[in-house]
Image (tube, rainbow over all chains, first blue to last red; front, side):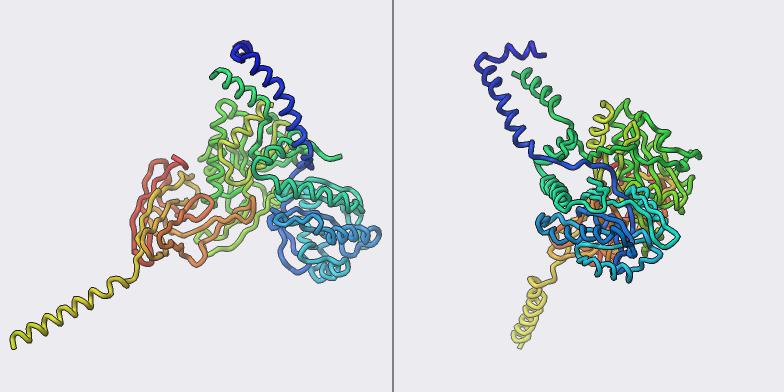
Length: 227
Length: 188
Length: 155
């Protein structure tokens, strides 16, 4: 194929092409390089819960929003207040990302539906300073919760005889497609890190139309994830 | 000149990465296995289908608009693959196991393609599988003569030959687009 | 005398003519409905229901409403719509208010994933190539009979 192509090019044209190629390459590299994406890890589970105001909350209601989840129970002591402090700090700094048309939501799911009635979740919301428009606290049917949290989010939790729970700390970041983009297996992830990751998804969603989409999809194929 | 143009196009196609029509996933772990009763009267597990690409869809037979449309598109996408079609298995899991009994499912899925498999779990099994794959479904009463209707996530999940969740197609993805993505996965 | 009678009669006639003529410009505008592209997908025998799709055009100056439909091929015919709850979830429900508004000088498309006519408890098989009778009932334009072709999409 190449043998029949080369003779068609006059030497001057060939020279232009040879000069142009690396220039185009460098340009492409410098324009595409800033694109960083978080990996699309897996699908977030489906669920239907009831929140602190008795309203229904499903994974479908949250589609189109970027959601940071954490998991606890209202009666939790220990490191739990520090965890809710991370959520509150993030709630207060969400304005920095200026998501605009791509809203960001915080969701805390309780795995203690027996005790965590909507009233109790409301009291918990007040205690942790949750703004109901941004941060919803919800729970649901125990069996379905096991499927969604244990099977879906890979969360380990087990009840103890004294009405407390043993569980691994976990935060999960899910994009508007309902795809898990990051797991943070710590009780206190850094707010700056969470904000940076949220911003990456917001930028991706904002640029997912037009030509930039191709660059983003290429970034996913070659996985240009941030350090 | 024409030859040069053709060569540039060929090289260009070869250099540009395939652009997926669905959302691509980079799952580090194989998708959760499940085993459900199939319309042929045998249980089928996802893990039995290793070596094939699995297209997973959740629907129900009383749904006359969205579900037949998706299943017809899936049948068409498979046809577009030509002789590679054998390497693609379509599964429809019913989200209405109460009304979609095995005989009902059998007649229903085979209408779209004799190769499709209809799967039915107990309500609990269905909930577990659907939850894992991010499928929300809920019955709602209606004034319709059809009785209750079921709202459900209408995406199509693609599980690759090694059992990893690779792609998600939203409702309304044309057969050509799905076929193009599947072709790419089959070549890899 | 005769002349007077004649004149009076003429006057009455003219008035009568005027009386019938004058309202013409203010006569209530009427809808003008045309239905095209009627089709439905072949469906499994076991499937209880099948959907019909079409475009309803209104070239008249008044809006009309599709209030009902019936067919000898179906036990019940309902007006339904599929709705997208979000990116992925689809729901289906009988149309709100039970009618579909056809705007003046406009059209409504009954299409996959949107508004459609639902044939419930099919009495015949929806095989490729079959033509089914359908009567559309409009609030102002009355009944319009059409034929729905059973075929694959986009053919």
